[in-house]
Length: 171
Image (cartoon, rainbow, N blue to C red; front, side, top):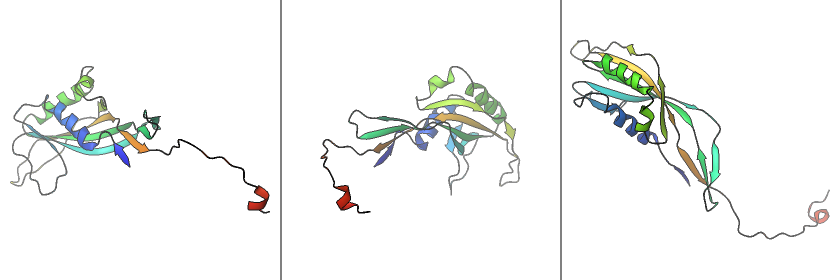
């Protein structure tokens, strides 16, 4: 059986917790791409997975029993952050600035490390009422390090015997 120490939900939770320290308390921070869910009213941020890139080959080690192989998988995870509403550009810029701040990594669990963000872009958004709404987007990149644990084969004893090759494996 395979188990994974941290999943995408854990990553989103860590990023949401951090974003809530940046935007005003009246803002919502939600995961994007939910079907049949209307946009929140007022100002808000959506988080949507954008990319996953492997960084290195797995780092393997056995647990203390020797029966479980733990595989550290290091990836760069791109999360698109869309800021909607009044002051969206201001908080998108603040997020980009704090993403690269030396104090920011301490605000995340050990399996998530903030790396960098791309440029902030304004994207047009016309509401159902035919009105323009502010929408600013940036993609933030995080190193995400889940551990995949897999059972391994082992033996406590081995029976060794001789096989007469010329009898069992005739030429």
